Image (tube, rainbow, N blue to C red; front, top):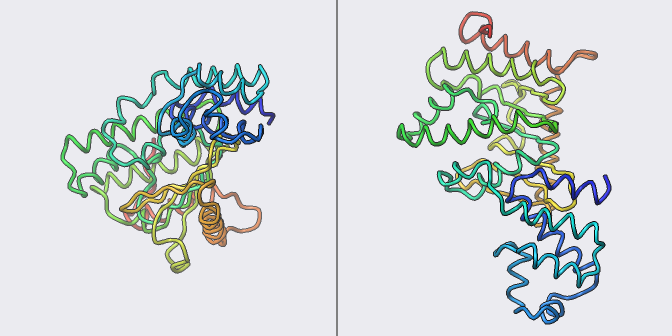
Length: 312
Protein backbone atom coordinates (compact mmCIF):
# COMPACT_ATOMS: atom_id res chain seq x y z
CA UNK A 1 0.00 0.00 0.00
CA UNK A 2 1.09 3.58 -0.68
CA UNK A 3 1.43 6.20 2.06
CA UNK A 4 -1.77 7.81 0.81
CA UNK A 5 -3.65 4.52 1.08
CA UNK A 6 -2.37 3.99 4.62
CA UNK A 7 -3.54 7.48 5.57
CA UNK A 8 -6.96 6.92 3.99
CA UNK A 9 -7.28 3.69 5.95
CA UNK A 10 -6.80 5.60 9.21
CA UNK A 11 -9.99 7.58 8.59
CA UNK A 12 -12.06 4.44 9.31
CA UNK A 13 -10.47 3.67 12.68
CA UNK A 14 -11.59 4.43 16.27
CA UNK A 15 -10.61 7.91 17.56
CA UNK A 16 -8.04 6.59 20.05
CA UNK A 17 -6.11 4.84 17.27
CA UNK A 18 -6.38 7.89 15.04
CA UNK A 19 -4.75 9.94 17.82
CA UNK A 20 -1.96 7.37 18.09
CA UNK A 21 -1.44 7.44 14.31
CA UNK A 22 -1.35 11.26 14.18
CA UNK A 23 1.39 11.52 16.81
CA UNK A 24 3.39 8.75 15.08
CA UNK A 25 3.09 10.61 11.77
CA UNK A 26 4.18 13.90 13.37
CA UNK A 27 7.23 12.32 14.99
CA UNK A 28 8.28 10.57 11.78
CA UNK A 29 7.84 13.73 9.70
CA UNK A 30 10.01 15.67 12.17
CA UNK A 31 12.71 12.99 12.10
CA UNK A 32 12.63 12.80 8.27
CA UNK A 33 13.07 16.60 8.17
CA UNK A 34 16.10 16.15 10.48
CA UNK A 35 14.69 18.58 13.04
CA UNK A 36 15.19 18.05 16.75
CA UNK A 37 12.39 18.41 19.29
CA UNK A 38 14.18 21.38 20.81
CA UNK A 39 14.55 23.16 17.46
CA UNK A 40 10.92 22.79 16.41
CA UNK A 41 9.66 23.80 19.86
CA UNK A 42 11.68 27.02 19.61
CA UNK A 43 10.50 27.59 16.03
CA UNK A 44 6.79 27.42 16.90
CA UNK A 45 7.29 29.11 20.31
CA UNK A 46 6.27 26.12 22.41
CA UNK A 47 7.89 24.72 25.49
CA UNK A 48 9.90 21.58 24.80
CA UNK A 49 7.73 19.69 27.28
CA UNK A 50 4.58 20.47 25.25
CA UNK A 51 6.05 18.95 22.11
CA UNK A 52 7.24 15.89 24.00
CA UNK A 53 3.81 15.44 25.57
CA UNK A 54 2.18 15.63 22.13
CA UNK A 55 4.55 13.11 20.54
CA UNK A 56 4.14 10.68 23.44
CA UNK A 57 0.35 11.02 23.56
CA UNK A 58 0.14 12.60 27.01
CA UNK A 59 -1.87 15.51 25.61
CA UNK A 60 -4.02 15.73 22.43
CA UNK A 61 -3.03 17.81 19.43
CA UNK A 62 -5.45 20.09 17.59
CA UNK A 63 -5.80 20.15 13.79
CA UNK A 64 -4.40 23.71 13.79
CA UNK A 65 -1.27 22.58 15.66
CA UNK A 66 -0.90 19.65 13.27
CA UNK A 67 -1.06 22.05 10.31
CA UNK A 68 1.56 24.34 11.84
CA UNK A 69 3.99 21.50 12.61
CA UNK A 70 3.65 19.86 9.19
CA UNK A 71 4.26 23.19 7.48
CA UNK A 72 7.58 23.43 9.35
CA UNK A 73 8.44 19.83 8.40
CA UNK A 74 7.83 20.44 4.69
CA UNK A 75 5.12 17.79 4.42
CA UNK A 76 3.30 17.66 1.08
CA UNK A 77 -0.09 19.38 0.89
CA UNK A 78 -1.97 16.16 0.13
CA UNK A 79 -0.48 14.36 3.14
CA UNK A 80 -1.01 17.42 5.30
CA UNK A 81 -4.71 17.60 4.33
CA UNK A 82 -5.18 13.88 5.01
CA UNK A 83 -3.58 13.86 8.47
CA UNK A 84 -5.41 17.07 9.51
CA UNK A 85 -8.71 15.41 8.58
CA UNK A 86 -7.71 12.41 10.69
CA UNK A 87 -6.77 14.68 13.61
CA UNK A 88 -10.20 16.29 13.35
CA UNK A 89 -11.96 12.89 13.13
CA UNK A 90 -10.09 11.79 16.26
CA UNK A 91 -12.12 14.28 18.28
CA UNK A 92 -15.40 12.67 17.25
CA UNK A 93 -17.56 10.15 19.15
CA UNK A 94 -16.04 6.80 20.05
CA UNK A 95 -18.38 3.88 19.30
CA UNK A 96 -17.29 2.29 22.59
CA UNK A 97 -17.60 5.50 24.65
CA UNK A 98 -20.59 4.24 26.63
CA UNK A 99 -18.71 1.10 27.62
CA UNK A 100 -15.25 2.45 28.42
CA UNK A 101 -16.41 3.90 31.75
CA UNK A 102 -16.88 0.30 32.97
CA UNK A 103 -13.34 -0.74 31.96
CA UNK A 104 -10.58 -0.44 34.54
CA UNK A 105 -7.57 -1.93 32.74
CA UNK A 106 -5.73 0.12 30.10
CA UNK A 107 -5.01 -3.09 28.23
CA UNK A 108 -8.70 -3.75 27.57
CA UNK A 109 -9.13 -0.25 26.12
CA UNK A 110 -6.36 -1.15 23.67
CA UNK A 111 -8.03 -4.47 22.84
CA UNK A 112 -11.26 -2.67 21.90
CA UNK A 113 -9.35 -0.51 19.44
CA UNK A 114 -7.00 -3.11 18.01
CA UNK A 115 -9.72 -5.70 17.41
CA UNK A 116 -11.30 -3.16 15.10
CA UNK A 117 -8.09 -2.01 13.40
CA UNK A 118 -6.12 -5.25 13.02
CA UNK A 119 -5.62 -6.83 9.61
CA UNK A 120 -4.70 -10.11 11.27
CA UNK A 121 -5.31 -11.57 14.72
CA UNK A 122 -3.47 -14.58 16.16
CA UNK A 123 -4.69 -15.88 19.51
CA UNK A 124 -4.01 -18.77 21.86
CA UNK A 125 -6.41 -19.55 24.68
CA UNK A 126 -5.43 -22.37 27.08
CA UNK A 127 -8.35 -22.34 29.52
CA UNK A 128 -11.37 -20.45 28.15
CA UNK A 129 -13.27 -19.81 24.94
CA UNK A 130 -12.02 -16.46 23.52
CA UNK A 131 -14.22 -13.44 24.22
CA UNK A 132 -15.04 -12.79 20.54
CA UNK A 133 -16.47 -16.31 20.28
CA UNK A 134 -18.37 -16.56 23.58
CA UNK A 135 -22.12 -16.94 23.86
CA UNK A 136 -24.04 -14.77 26.29
CA UNK A 137 -24.80 -17.77 28.54
CA UNK A 138 -21.17 -18.87 28.65
CA UNK A 139 -19.88 -15.38 29.43
CA UNK A 140 -22.39 -14.75 32.23
CA UNK A 141 -21.79 -18.19 33.78
CA UNK A 142 -18.05 -17.55 33.70
CA UNK A 143 -18.46 -14.17 35.38
CA UNK A 144 -20.70 -15.73 38.03
CA UNK A 145 -18.00 -18.32 38.74
CA UNK A 146 -15.60 -15.42 39.27
CA UNK A 147 -17.91 -13.91 41.90
CA UNK A 148 -18.95 -10.92 39.81
CA UNK A 149 -22.15 -9.22 40.96
CA UNK A 150 -25.14 -9.38 38.61
CA UNK A 151 -24.68 -5.70 37.79
CA UNK A 152 -20.96 -6.05 37.06
CA UNK A 153 -21.55 -9.22 35.03
CA UNK A 154 -24.07 -7.43 32.81
CA UNK A 155 -21.69 -4.48 32.37
CA UNK A 156 -18.89 -6.79 31.26
CA UNK A 157 -21.19 -8.75 28.97
CA UNK A 158 -22.41 -5.47 27.46
CA UNK A 159 -18.81 -4.62 26.55
CA UNK A 160 -18.17 -8.10 25.16
CA UNK A 161 -21.39 -8.05 23.17
CA UNK A 162 -20.50 -4.64 21.69
CA UNK A 163 -17.04 -5.96 20.80
CA UNK A 164 -18.58 -8.90 18.97
CA UNK A 165 -21.15 -6.82 17.10
CA UNK A 166 -18.64 -4.21 15.97
CA UNK A 167 -16.03 -6.77 15.03
CA UNK A 168 -18.14 -9.21 13.03
CA UNK A 169 -19.98 -6.53 11.07
CA UNK A 170 -16.74 -4.99 9.75
CA UNK A 171 -16.63 -4.69 5.99
CA UNK A 172 -12.86 -4.95 5.81
CA UNK A 173 -12.06 -8.55 6.65
CA UNK A 174 -9.52 -9.53 9.28
CA UNK A 175 -7.58 -12.78 8.95
CA UNK A 176 -7.96 -14.71 12.19
CA UNK A 177 -6.12 -17.76 13.51
CA UNK A 178 -7.19 -18.99 16.94
CA UNK A 179 -5.90 -21.98 18.91
CA UNK A 180 -8.09 -23.22 21.75
CA UNK A 181 -6.61 -25.81 24.09
CA UNK A 182 -8.84 -28.85 24.54
CA UNK A 183 -8.98 -28.09 28.28
CA UNK A 184 -11.08 -24.98 27.57
CA UNK A 185 -13.82 -27.20 26.15
CA UNK A 186 -13.79 -29.58 29.10
CA UNK A 187 -13.73 -27.08 31.95
CA UNK A 188 -17.24 -26.78 33.33
CA UNK A 189 -18.71 -23.31 32.81
CA UNK A 190 -22.39 -23.14 33.72
CA UNK A 191 -24.76 -26.04 33.06
CA UNK A 192 -24.33 -28.71 30.38
CA UNK A 193 -26.71 -26.78 28.13
CA UNK A 194 -24.41 -23.75 28.37
CA UNK A 195 -21.40 -25.70 27.14
CA UNK A 196 -23.36 -27.47 24.41
CA UNK A 197 -24.56 -24.12 23.06
CA UNK A 198 -21.01 -22.75 23.23
CA UNK A 199 -19.60 -25.69 21.29
CA UNK A 200 -22.40 -25.29 18.74
CA UNK A 201 -21.49 -21.60 18.43
CA UNK A 202 -17.85 -22.46 17.75
CA UNK A 203 -18.94 -24.84 15.00
CA UNK A 204 -21.10 -22.08 13.50
CA UNK A 205 -18.20 -19.60 13.54
CA UNK A 206 -15.95 -22.10 11.76
CA UNK A 207 -18.54 -22.55 9.00
CA UNK A 208 -19.93 -19.01 8.65
CA UNK A 209 -16.56 -17.22 8.64
CA UNK A 210 -14.50 -19.95 6.96
CA UNK A 211 -12.89 -17.48 4.54
CA UNK A 212 -11.39 -15.34 7.30
CA UNK A 213 -11.37 -17.43 10.50
CA UNK A 214 -9.29 -20.56 11.06
CA UNK A 215 -9.88 -22.28 14.39
CA UNK A 216 -7.87 -25.18 15.77
CA UNK A 217 -7.84 -27.26 18.95
CA UNK A 218 -4.63 -28.23 20.75
CA UNK A 219 -5.26 -31.74 22.15
CA UNK A 220 -4.44 -32.91 25.66
CA UNK A 221 -2.25 -35.78 24.47
CA UNK A 222 0.28 -33.48 22.78
CA UNK A 223 1.67 -32.63 26.20
CA UNK A 224 2.43 -29.25 27.73
CA UNK A 225 4.35 -27.25 25.12
CA UNK A 226 6.24 -24.07 25.91
CA UNK A 227 4.01 -21.01 25.93
CA UNK A 228 0.71 -22.61 26.90
CA UNK A 229 0.59 -21.40 30.51
CA UNK A 230 -1.32 -18.22 29.62
CA UNK A 231 -3.40 -16.86 26.80
CA UNK A 232 -2.28 -14.13 24.44
CA UNK A 233 -3.56 -12.31 21.38
CA UNK A 234 -1.47 -10.68 18.68
CA UNK A 235 -2.83 -7.78 16.63
CA UNK A 236 -1.09 -6.93 13.35
CA UNK A 237 -2.25 -3.66 11.73
CA UNK A 238 0.02 -3.66 8.65
CA UNK A 239 -0.02 0.13 8.84
CA UNK A 240 3.25 2.06 9.37
CA UNK A 241 1.48 4.60 11.57
CA UNK A 242 0.04 2.03 13.98
CA UNK A 243 2.09 -0.22 16.20
CA UNK A 244 1.43 -3.95 16.40
CA UNK A 245 0.37 -5.27 19.79
CA UNK A 246 0.41 -8.38 21.97
CA UNK A 247 -2.22 -8.59 24.70
CA UNK A 248 -1.29 -11.07 27.43
CA UNK A 249 -4.14 -12.48 29.47
CA UNK A 250 -3.02 -12.80 33.06
CA UNK A 251 -3.72 -11.00 36.33
CA UNK A 252 -1.72 -7.98 35.12
CA UNK A 253 -3.30 -7.81 31.64
CA UNK A 254 -0.03 -6.83 29.98
CA UNK A 255 0.54 -5.23 26.59
CA UNK A 256 3.68 -5.46 24.47
CA UNK A 257 4.05 -2.95 21.65
CA UNK A 258 6.32 -3.98 18.80
CA UNK A 259 8.06 -0.59 18.60
CA UNK A 260 8.83 -0.67 22.32
CA UNK A 261 9.81 -4.34 22.75
CA UNK A 262 10.34 -5.96 19.33
CA UNK A 263 12.24 -8.93 20.74
CA UNK A 264 9.48 -9.91 23.15
CA UNK A 265 6.87 -9.34 20.46
CA UNK A 266 8.74 -11.70 18.12
CA UNK A 267 8.99 -14.31 20.87
CA UNK A 268 5.21 -14.44 21.15
CA UNK A 269 4.82 -14.65 17.39
CA UNK A 270 7.26 -17.57 17.23
CA UNK A 271 5.46 -19.27 20.14
CA UNK A 272 2.11 -18.91 18.40
CA UNK A 273 3.25 -20.55 15.17
CA UNK A 274 4.93 -23.40 17.05
CA UNK A 275 1.64 -24.05 18.87
CA UNK A 276 -0.22 -23.75 15.55
CA UNK A 277 2.02 -26.33 13.88
CA UNK A 278 1.58 -28.63 16.87
CA UNK A 279 -2.21 -28.28 16.78
CA UNK A 280 -2.15 -29.14 13.07
CA UNK A 281 0.28 -32.04 13.41
CA UNK A 282 -2.60 -34.58 13.25
CA UNK A 283 -4.00 -33.05 10.09
CA UNK A 284 -3.90 -35.58 7.25
CA UNK A 285 -2.59 -34.54 3.84
CA UNK A 286 -5.32 -32.91 1.79
CA UNK A 287 -7.74 -32.49 4.68
CA UNK A 288 -9.19 -29.10 5.61
CA UNK A 289 -8.36 -27.39 8.91
CA UNK A 290 -12.02 -26.39 9.29
CA UNK A 291 -13.24 -29.96 8.86
CA UNK A 292 -10.62 -31.20 11.32
CA UNK A 293 -11.74 -28.58 13.87
CA UNK A 294 -15.43 -29.49 13.51
CA UNK A 295 -14.68 -33.22 13.80
CA UNK A 296 -12.73 -32.56 16.99
CA UNK A 297 -15.62 -30.50 18.39
CA UNK A 298 -18.00 -33.33 17.57
CA UNK A 299 -15.84 -35.87 19.42
CA UNK A 300 -15.66 -33.63 22.49
CA UNK A 301 -19.41 -33.02 22.48
CA UNK A 302 -20.16 -36.76 22.25
CA UNK A 303 -17.63 -37.61 24.98
CA UNK A 304 -19.02 -34.96 27.33
CA UNK A 305 -22.72 -35.07 26.60
CA UNK A 306 -23.31 -38.30 24.63
CA UNK A 307 -24.90 -36.56 21.67
CA UNK A 308 -24.18 -34.67 18.46
CA UNK A 309 -23.60 -30.92 18.45
CA UNK A 310 -26.80 -28.91 18.82
CA UNK A 311 -28.39 -27.68 15.61
CA UNK A 312 -28.88 -23.93 15.06
